[in-house]
Length: 208
Image (tube, rainbow, N blue to C red):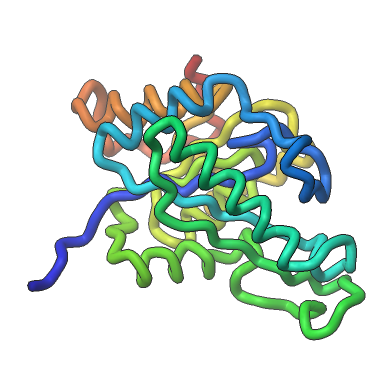
């Protein structure tokens, strides 16, 4: 029997879901962003499949190996499971054009802002991207989400410093943290405000 397409929330890892420690693969240093667990619980209860979508150029740069990242993946999956939150998938890009380790030193279609990881996750899990969301903390996340056909939410926590805006890099919603992002998604699900709105010429107001 054919499975109907499902809705998903795709999440950037570092700076969105967990505190940003550059190139960290030590589970002991992992800390959840404030309110992250509660936000994911609410999204899971609302029927969203949850995915992590992350650039991991440390592999291409020789800072760590894929086996080390697999330990991080196992840790995050296990921690979420303790709170009753199933992680549907963990998708990462190990590439960077300025890397030092072949064959990772390439231009690819999976490194955000390219949408390759989201498209692969959607194909693997029968996800309807038009009813799905991508939440991140920099505009590359927004661009990847828009290119994949998702609605997008930018967490304005100071990690985006360049603010190179274009229509493809303009988030549908701007929030202060992951909890606020979950509230926006659930409010739209309840039809508390319209999914269709005029395309803004500047960033939308921050929801808290």
